[in-house]
Each structure stands twice: as C-alpha cells, then as structure tokens.
Length: 208
Image 1 (cartoon, helix red, strand yellow):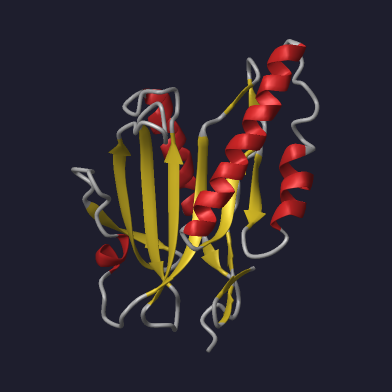
Image 2 (cartoon, rainbow, N blue to C red):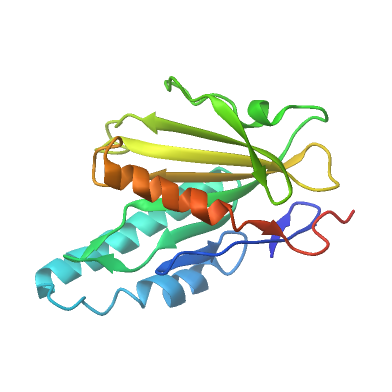
C-alpha cells in the first residue's frame, strides 16, 4: 500500500520477472539492501570478476541516484529491474509512482504538463483500473551531466477514486539499447504498458 499525505491510497500491479519495488516514504534503505544490493553481490555466470564488480558498483550508484530523483519529485514508490541481462548488463529502465494534488476540475492532461524542451508529447486517453486515465509518450534528448544517451518516456496520470483533484502519476523511462527509436527500446516501453494493464486500486482506495 502507498500513502498520500493525508490518507491511505492503495494500489496493486504485477511486475515482470526481475523487477522489484522500493518504497520511498519509509523503509527505503532496508529495501535497497534486501531487494537490490544483496541480489547483485553474486556475479552472473559467465561474467568476468572485474566486469561483475563494475556491474555491482554501477547498480548501487544508479539506484541511489534514482531514489534521490524520485524523492525530489514526490515519489511514493520506485520500481527497478535487479536481474542482469546476458553479458552482465542491467536493463536501463525504471518507473516511479507519485501522488499529486491539484485544483478541482483540472484536466489530466494539465497534471502531466509539457516536459521542457520536448516536442510531440501529445496525451491520449487510456482506460486504467476501470476509470479514464491519460497516457503520454515522448523522447528526451541526452543532457550533458545528466544522461549520455536519449531516453524514451511513458507517463500515466490516473484520478484517485472518490478524491477530486487528486491523481496518481506513474512515470517510466528507459535508455533501452541507446537508441530511443529501436525495436528493443520500444519493446521495453511496451513492457511498461503491459504492467499498467494490471494496475488496480486496493479496497478502500477512495475512502475519505
């Protein structure tokens, strides 16, 4: 269950194999140690020891960066892949679930807003958890000091049942194979869309 500032809002979703949830409000460090860092202590079979050590250091640094970024954005939960791909590489992808409070009567598209410096990020209506949500997909170019490759992003905004002006925003990003237009990168984004088809509200999510 996730918690918004003044009350419980629960949701569930099914994760692909190798993915895990990191809570951002409490128990974050314990979850990182148990679900992420301990799992990467073992070097994958067929991977050289030096490469395995570099892999572990990369995962630790990158996940800690993602946690910091997600908290600054008001995130409730962070989801990351923890299993190494063939060759000892980690999948460059993650998504964050965040609670947003806005003015009554504001459209979902306005909650998403328009990312700075991004063109063609038009929103489309999608059914999510028995209600009407909005989905947006766009490509963010690489920025010096932040990312060395472009990334493909998919965002969903869903109204919290029974709470006008409250939204859940789910934001996904992936560098894929380094090419945001490649079949592989698009397949990773499609995987996130498949995860969102399993999203549902927990009983009592709309309680006052």
